[in-house]
Image (cartoon, rainbow, N blue to C red; front, side):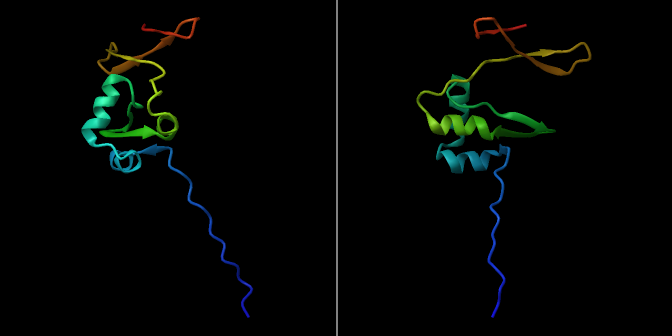
Length: 101
């Protein structure tokens, strides 16, 4: 008689999802995802290093919770640093709205 128990540990959710995962999770096409990002109605992708891009789990969960009511928390402006690197600048005002620096 075996006393071993079948213990399965759930795998942790990833912190970031790649495009193929986002398409599978949301049932949106690639072009629909990017069109919604441009309109501010879908979480933007973030750089994962090199050419890799992904979506934060929290952003996708917020969109899944209320797709029609989702709006990006803010926008950003891409600027160049003195060394030529691309830099995103976002600042919050006292009222909670964004002010670009």
